[in-house]
Length: 61
Picture (cartoon, rainbow, N blue to C red):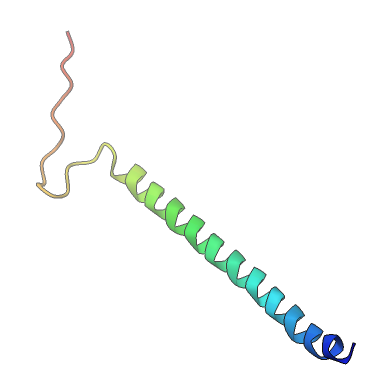
């Protein structure tokens, strides 16, 4: 029983650290995905940045 009372605080702190770090990494992953989606949405309908040319006009019949 002595060993449990000695190791339990360290195990609890380790578990808390694990869950906090996992939450931070998941939030970072979601933020990067949202930022990439926003950048992609911002570039839709704008001139092609690689060539500097605008998209060809749509053919209306």
